[in-house]
Image (cartoon, rainbow, N blue to C red):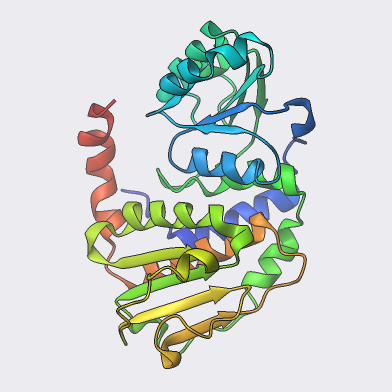
Length: 293
């Protein structure tokens, strides 16, 4: 009998419960001035969150080799000494990324949830995070743990916040959803865009912008079929007035809360629509997904 897959919102609650009882390891970024920070997909986005207030050179699987060439003289001078590779699995692209970083003369740190992975075996240093079982691609606990290790937010307080706001009565009826987030949370937006592709593919519109991005012609065409959700900011201009939902957040809200909140809402959207992810993930995992590597 197949195990029933949970929706994203349920994974968020499970992850918060887990981290309330199991604190993630401490992450001291001061030890790594101006590193390369390398990851794929939401590992990359997690890196931009971890280093949102620190100098870093961000790279992904598509441009890391070229960036190493571009910064060759800077690396040789000793100005850049470290590469931080972020990978929940510690496999796939992270293995060659560590190999290339070491060839370039960089010290390597791997942030992973797989201490025995191929990448962990060759990295100079490994910080291993615990996670909870969750559907493939969700990666809620994997990256949430890393973010919590940096922001040191209280998972129980985050859970209290996301369970104590009320959804609009017609929430389930929309065909399109757009998030508008404070500029400081810009790096959450691409994580939501990835969830759109994973959970809905071409079947539903899910957009996410910072306030600054939203001003640049993102809402030229409004629709009564789109709900515009602003979290932690006022929305006076984006979307039709009767189809806006403003969510107030505590003044001290940081990245773990914003990620948990927005993922929770995306999970509620997933819960209200056809199970596109559930219908396709098994075939993806057993067939065309792995073949791309």
